[in-house]
Image 1 (tube, rainbow, N blue to C red):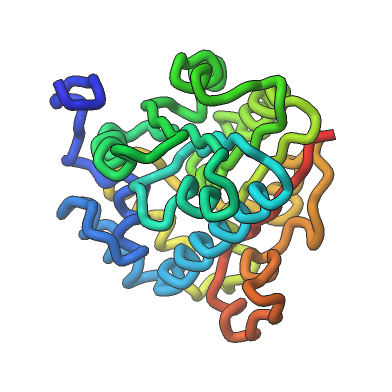
Image 2 (cartoon, rainbow, N blue to C red):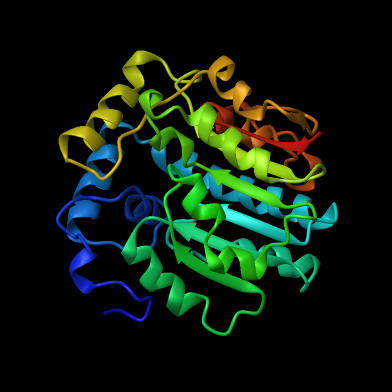
Length: 273
């Protein structure tokens, strides 16, 4: 058994995992050869995955600061991935040490790293859970210890829904979590799209890597019109659902057109009515 309470045999390093590939795109070292090989192949066919991933990380930082600055004092971060500093709780605690953060991911390797990185961090917890099982996630005792559903909650679904297929009905999954949240809660969401890249950019080939290498999840990019309904029941914070560098850019300066050309992700924040 690991320190996180699951059998070592459950750790599968024979197939690439999106969380560990994401870590590689960010320049991290918490990954395995199978992840590095698959991630490097993605980079080879679609080099913009690196600036896109790093722009997504910066979006996450800005969105968490927004949550904390707007008074949110508890956050559920689903699909957190390998903890990379500064992570959600570190950003939130820059605004208020009172913010409580529950991290959730379905990869035992992530759990191992979370145990190491979160050791001693106040007001945080981690448990293994799957976004596709909202009842199990919402009823988990760790969530019950950290989150008061009578008070507004920040729900983070950052770069995770594009790993949910249409058959798995991502809109219904988001709605299940939304319905558990009180009014005034906020949803932070980002999602990969092909809206900003021509066919020759290699995005289709990058998606195929996840399938051909038997990654634990495949990628479904979606258009603006397909991502927007995930915010049903929420009022979008200005500037709405936009290409992520355009969402509250650092310092208020508009991003350069050259930066936007390389980023294939939408992001937004909504407040539950």
